[in-house]
Amino acid sequence: MASTRRGWIGSLIGAGLIGAAGGVRGEDAVELLQDRHWEQGFKLHDPEPGQHVVIGHLPPAAPDPVWGLSQWSSAFPLTDDHVIDVPGGYGAANSARSVVAKPEEGYLYLKVNAHREYGGRARRHGEPWPHLLAEQRLAPSPGLDQLRSIPFRLQARLAKCEKFETSEYTPSLHAAQYQLFITAQNLNQSSPGYGDYYWFGIQIFDDREEIPRPMTHVDTGTGKLIYAPGGDAYASESTHSGDWVSFEGDLLPEMLGGLQRAWERDLLADSQDLSDYRIGGMNIGWEVPGIFDVAVELRDFDLRAVHG
Image 1 (cartoon, rainbow, N blue to C red):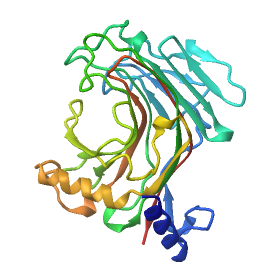
Image 2 (tube, helix red, strand yellow; image 1 turned 30 degrees about the vertical axis):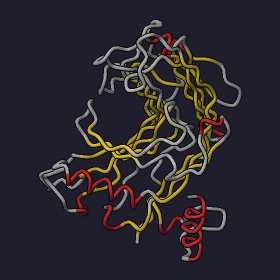
Image 3 (cartoon, rainbow, N blue to C red; image 1 turned 45 degrees about the vertical axis):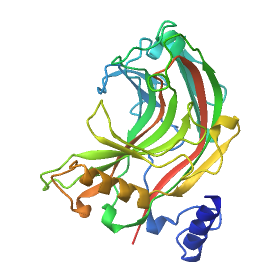
Image 4 (cartoon, rainbow, N blue to C red; image 1 turned 90 degrees about the vertical axis):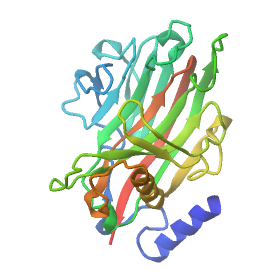
């Protein structure tokens, strides 16, 4: 996979779309991430699943952050009361979760202690699980039919993964996953399918597999399709090593493949017109259905849309 990515990057350099240092030239691209170094902070969201009720800000003086921190189904959500001192940045922590951002380094640390969340017992079938997700509405961009590529990159390192097995443990119910999800969404207000979307995923860590296999299923929370290529689609190493791992590539081909999968399942059925669909929003971080104490460090996160 590494040679494929080098070939793709080389072709963009040859076409003049990116410089040798890897930056997409401004006149050809839209920078999708707003405040990609987390300089403006976060809105802290209430743990009610699917809701975005703001219960605080991080840092507390942050005026109007574009980033939100979703804490769905957490018994111990972060609030203004949990702020901690971080040299060169800001953060918050309690007994069940923590977040640290260092804007000058483009660095983000997310940690979940699900052993604390579950009180030491295994989650039962049908019960919700804690989330810790950095999310935002991405900058407006042209329709998918007008894009030439969606270059992205990030570096991630598994900082901690401690598993607590009980007699009820089963991998199908009890896992820890750190993923990036982006919505491909119908944003044509004249379309009968306006607002509908599917989740396109990039699997950064899954405790059950060093290289996660591709997945296609309907999300139980939103009723929307989730499609994620295998863990080797954008990285040639596994984050299980504990080393920094680079993820990079062009998301457009697989994102279009996900749309096709949705249509084949009679999802997004109100429109199969590619021009109706655009990149909508994103989230990145933890979903922890199992009893794990886990943390990932993130840096050099970039996401763009090249048109023409």
